[in-house]
Amino acid sequence: MPITLEKVSHTYQAGSPFQATALHEIDLTIEDGELLALIGHTGSGKSTLAQHLNGLLQPTSGRVLLDGQDINRKDHNKRALRFQVGLVFQYPEYQLFEETVAKDIGFGPRNMGLSQQEVDDRVREAMDMLGLPYDEIAEKSPFELSGGQMRRVALAGVLAMRPRVLVLDEPTAGLDPRARDFLLNDVSRLHAGGTTVVMISHSMDDVARLATRVAVLAKGSLNMVGTPREVFSQVERLGAMGLDVPQASKLRWMLAKEGLALPECYLLDDLADALAAALKGGAPDAP
Amino acid sequence: MLRDITLGQYYPVDSPVHRLDPRVKILLTMAFIVCVFLVGSPLGYVPIVAYLALASHLARLPYKMMLKALRPLRILLVFTFVLNLFFGTGQTELIRVGFIRITQEGLLNAVHFSLRLIFLVTGSSILTLTTAPVTLTDGLERLASPLKIIRFPAHEMAMMMTIALRFIPTLAEEADKIMKAQSARGADFTTGSLRQRARALIPLLVPLFVSAFRRAGDLAMAMESRCYRGGEGRTRLNVLRIRRGDWLAMGSMVLLFAVVLLMKRYV
Ligand SMILES: Nc1ncnc2c1ncn2[C@@H]1O[C@H](COP(=O)(O)OP(=O)(O)O)[C@@H](O)[C@H]1O
Ligand SMILES: [Mg+2]
Image 1 (cartoon, rainbow over the protein chains, first blue to last red):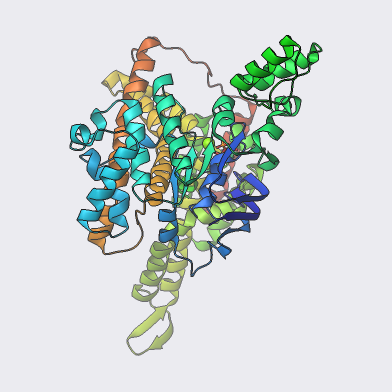
Image 2 (cartoon, chains in turn orange, red):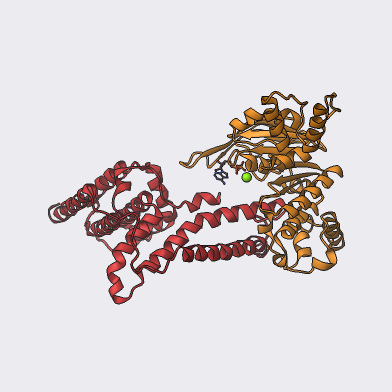
C-alpha cells in the first residue's frame, strides 16, 4: 500500500496577507514496510507533509495517491483512510480527554464502528504492544499518568485502529531519556512487525539507528532522499542547512579531515569497529 | 481555518493611519460616529464618503477589507431598508400596488438610515483594521485612567483584555491542532444530528480547557517571577506620544464637522 506524493504543494491561507508556502512540489513515495525518517529544520514543512498523508490537509496543487487512488477525490472515503494511515501528532498527550485510559484508547476503534468486545480486545492489544500494564492503569484517568506514559497512551490510541501506515510527528520531543528509549524501541518493534512507519525526528542518532530511508526537507522542498548512509555522508551539505549528523558520521568526517580515512558508517558501533581495524593496520570488516 | 478568524480584523501594513496614536484614533472614531449622526439628508453623506475614502486610502486598506466588515450586517441592512421603505408615513406617493405603498419620504428614509448604518460600521472598522488589538487596549487604558479616581480598575481591565487577545490565536491554533488530532482518530465534527455534534465536541473541549488552565497557571507564574503586582507605579516601554500626524488627523476631523454642520444648515 505505497503512498505516493506527486508534485504536492501546500500554501497556508492562500490569497490573504498571511499566506505562507509550506511545501513546494514534493515528489516522494513511501514504500511498504520501510521506516522513512523525515528530517529538516523547524518550519521546513515536515508536519505539513505528515498531515497530507492521511488527508487532513489537501495539497494546494499536486496529488496524494494511496494504492494509485487519489485520496482527495470526492468519492474517496476519508474516514476509512484515517484508520489505515494512523497519524500521531507532536505532543499527542495533549489530546487525551476521556475519563479512563481504556476509553481514550478505545476512541478510534469506537469511531470505526466496532463492537464493544472488539474495541476492548484492541485496547488490550495496543496496551500490550506498548508495555502499558492494563490491569494497573486501564481504569485510571489519563491525567494521572506520567508524561512518558501519557505519550504512550496517546500512541496506543492510534495503534488500536491497527493502521497499516504509522506517521509519527516528533514522537520523542520533550521526553526524558528513559521514556525516549522505551518509545523508540516500540517504534522499532512495530516496524519489525510489518508496519510502514514515517517518523519525523530531530535526533539524527535515532534516525541513524532506526531508519531504512531518510528524506531531508529544506524550506518546503525535498532536498535529499536516500539511505541513511547516502544522506549522512553529506556532512557539509546538511551542516549548511543547519542540520546535524549522527555522532559517528561527524567523528568520521573529522578524522577524514585529519587524514584518517575510514569506510562509510553512521552508527557508533560500526565506527568503533572500523577505527579499531584501521588502527590495527588491517582492513576493516564490512561495516 | 480557525486561524483566519482569530487574527481578527487587524490588517498589518505600515501607513500614516496605522502609526497614529491609538488614543487619538479612538477619539476620532467616536467623533466620526457623532458626525454621521449629525447628517440630515442622503446628500449630506458626500463629505462622509470623501473622508472615509481618504482615510482608507491613506491607511492602504483594500476596499474589499472594508466591505468584509459589512458582511455580518447584511441582513440588518436589508431589514432597515425594507422596513423604512414600506412602512414610512410620508405623503407623496410614488407607487401603490394593492396595500403596498411606497412614498418619497419612505424611500429617502430607507436610503438615509441604511447609509448611516453602512458608514458607522465602515468608519469604526478603519479603527480596528489599522490598530493592533494590543495597541487598542493600551489606548483604551490610557483614556480610561482618569476613571481610576472613582476606583475603576482601568489597568486591570486592560491587562485582562490584552491577555485574552494575546491568547485567542494561541487557543485557536490549539483547537485546530486538537481537532485534527481527533479527526485522525476518526472523530467527526461536521455531520450528524445537533445532539451528536454537541457530543462530538467533548474530545475537543476537554483537552482545550485542560491546556487553557495549564497556560493560565504558567503565565501567572511567569508574571509573578518578574514581580508583576498590578498597575501601581508601573512604567511603559512604549510611551504614547501625540505627534504631528495626530494633530493633522484631529484637524481633519474638525474640518469634517464644519462641513457637515454647514451642509445641514444650507443644503
Ligand atoms: N496552520 C498554519 N497556518 C499558517 N501557516 C502555517 C500553519 N502551520 C504551519 N504553518 C507554516 O508553514 C511552515 C511549515 O510548518 P510546519 O509544517 O509546521 O514545519 P515543521 O513541522 O517542519 O516545523 C512554517 O513556516 C509555518 O509557519
Ligand atoms: Mg512540526
